[in-house]
Length: 263
Image (cartoon, rainbow, N blue to C red; front, side, top):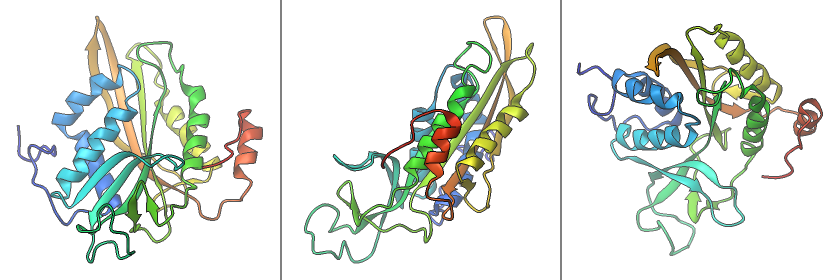
């Protein structure tokens, strides 16, 4: 295997790489590296992979930052919003809030909060595009989750977010799978995702609109005498801070689904 493969076995960690945007961009490249791509592509044909990709991202953060950042999953105590990923880092001077409890000696703080979502056009080898109707409810749930304004402590950890304007990010994975004998509708599928995201005031982390970045496209896999093509895109999203307050009431009326009522 070439040394420039891009996976964690063939690249060196970089302790300077600790920002969430750089980490998310690096993770996209990691997923597209030959070692990882060949391992993950068959899984995307096997069903929903949100939890798997979340775990891959968590280990990538630890490796890429040289141990300077560490992720905890399902982050939250009773009566708190459970967050898919919390990125922790060591800060100077300990907690500084007079609490002799957890993490004081080491000065560990929660620096980034991330909710992960996985969208797919079909479930396993089932009916073509049988998961399109899940796009709107999934993104509505993501928009609701991104409204969270964390308190000074969450899951017993001090919160010291690095971002000035974003409290919670959305890490979105979007896959498209089809048989080679089926019509290629991936462009219209990805466009549908972006239209729904725009209507819910979801934005790419540094744009005023949503966007999806290519991880790989039309990777071929042969299974049970059939050829399949697998495409994957990802992005780090935020919620538009200038969104109208009644956005979720509008979503309810448009989508015909119950509107979220709290965090």
